[in-house]
Length: 334
Image 1 (cartoon, rainbow, N blue to C red):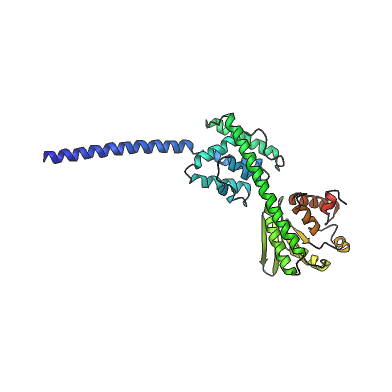
Image 2: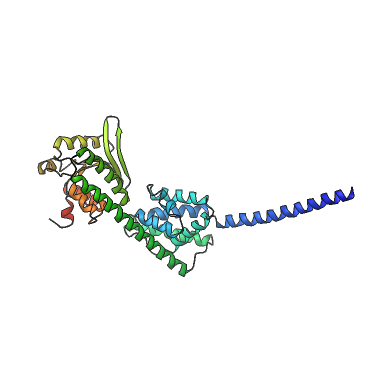
């Protein structure tokens, strides 16, 4: 009886020691987790920095990758607005084994920025202020940053990723250009029209413009749409042998006019436009832009970016009432 009691007592002691050791390990693990986990205010400020300091999404993706984010995860939410993209990425990192470490790396690299990573950021002062506030929060929370040698290596890695993304962009442009040129020799114009829709769907994201492909609302068929600088743009895309008529473009303008005042239109005609049709839509009250096949070719050849073309056309329409300003004139080729 005494022997049985002794064995039970011994087992209980072993169990208590095991439990005590397990609790020590758990306590140490939880301490490490909570030490690594970023405070809420710092997470929110990281989101602000990503949204305000960067302009091009390619650079955001390259930055995330340089901080140790998996390439697939870095580009997974690229279609979202930058603020939402950053918030979603941080949330997904919460559930990864090394997620907190990567979040710390993102914080570290942002704190080491002396200038904005994108000179074209829409509000540079807001971006600088966001970075300054993040650095102040990091100091207040006693969050250390990595040494300068690691910082240099991170910058090199970021540059390498930026080059890779640029090369990928060049490859996509080359593929789209080949598809575009192949359709010129096709007798099936309907197929060419579908190809144009596919080209536009792939072309816009290359220049960080979210594009919605063809869709239908009530009795209206919309070939596509995108957002730029606070305005929504409806797209009408035609690839036929004949030139669009005034009534055809007028019908598209009426589609635009039925939407909010912040909605504008872009009419794309690969065959071009007649001069008298262009003039009929110029002047006060115009809210559409014309894009020709020649304009598209300049983009696919890599001579100018799509967003630069659109902004230049918008400026010309706003300042001079011109609905069609050829890219050739932008490049000084005419």
